[in-house]
Length: 532
Image 1: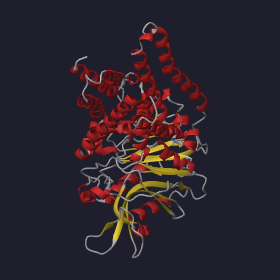
Image 2: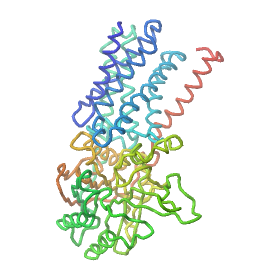
Image 3: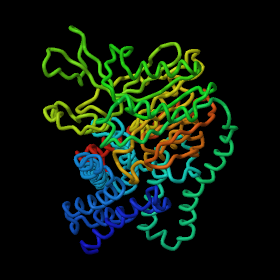
Image 4: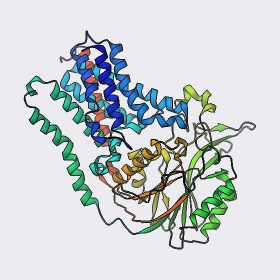
């Protein structure tokens, strides 16, 4: 095999990964997407003298760069720096994981090496959920957000069940391809692979039938999509006019039976200090609106800030006032208001790296002032440790106030449910990306959360797509992109906790601990304590 053959195969893998992704992808391609790259790796494994390390690095990086740029190119519309991190750095991280697997495989042999690829990759996806460069957008299990009828069993496994499914099929195909003893058994081995693909789909349909309860009826919820241009209007026009515009939209659907009214992320652009919430014109206006509808609860996004009192412990994200010896934290906040006058707050805590959070602040803290403004503030925003649930005054309803990027994290959203949420609200502003696949992908990731938790979702997006998502992941009343809209739906509350909600990303944790054991095993071989 010539060097250019290796690059062509690597490019093919990148294209297959990209073209399997929704919203316009062909999902079944994911089951063969890693095969060309694994063929390259297997050739390098069997012929170490013919494939230089740099060649294998370049070929592998070509695969992951192609995948990343074709699926997430739209990030550039919000931030070129964010796009560089999401594409160049993420491809480099993926390359590092793949080359590490190749290195371990050379020590432990082919059988354990194949297992290493699966557990190392899932471990990488798991770590990618919770560190300063978190970017789980391309977690393999997410690819099935375009074919929800295939993965109704996510209520038991979450997205890592999908990742495991994809990796097993790809590894099995290459395993059979390189085994001479199987070359005369294509039909039999092909049947095994087909079964591995089709059986989970069959199981999904069975699970879906049992999960398909009477989801209609229940609590009336109204969702507003104000469609305020985030670049040219949102933070540069009168915040009073913007709120009045949103309330006029709400008037089209809100009535005396409405229980919840949702507005999008950072809908309130007034400077709101949390010590003086009651003095905010925006808060007072919303409280006056509720007086007309005593049953109504409003969930709305805002940019808020908190001043630290003298002697109070500062957070790691605290900022100093320019002209005063005092500190404050800025937040991307969800607020709930009700007829009792109580104000509930939740601070977004899964922050977008390089946009809302400066990664590795001990290194980059001096560059925080260059962070891109995507929420009304710049620099590293504050966060909180607990997933706050917004309760109704009688505590019969618990809403999960999920803000934007947080809806990409399965176990994270499940924590709201464990804390008492019986429906999920997603408030977001996807207008930063323009009319690209980005907001469509983000919407579909929300559908995965509905399946995992079996909860209704009410989704308010500033510029679209706003909708309701039932517990099977079906999207209802989806609004058009870049148009003002208001929708109303009766949703069913559920206090049931799925297996996944209770146990979270147990598949990924099992893969992580298995990875540690394989690494230890490879080191014992490396230092000749054990034989291969």
